Length: 196
Image (cartoon, rainbow, N blue to C red; front, side, top):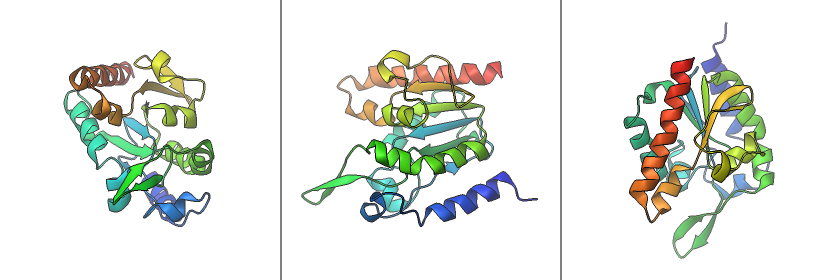
């Protein structure tokens, strides 16, 4: 019998050759999700950043550091989470010698949706966490971060929480307050797990 983890490895290998949109020509590589299968919590972000694009792993850059600190401040075990993005290639524009993040468009979210659906099907998270507006657009377009963040929801038939993307903490002028609010949202995730 083929395990769900093995099936996901096969799908990730298939996604390496994805040409469903033009971003495959822009990004260095497809950055598929990684982590526990099955998972207590599945985090869905926007797209890989510069470091993720170069290393081929999700959430290894500065935003990943914020997420890591958030996990450490709660009872969420990193060993029981799955990390992925709504879009699997890095969309960027060149400024000097730097590659600057550019928000993926609806067409990119749609092109990658097949991969995200497969991840949800095989990871079967107990709780889903949508990190920012692009993740919400991918799975629950009726949601708004400013209106719906930090409260129990249901998305794709799974208990869910919507919060800001960790990169928003890095951009905030009030970084300590932004981090505290992010951690408070993660505590809602802990509560949903405890209720399971």
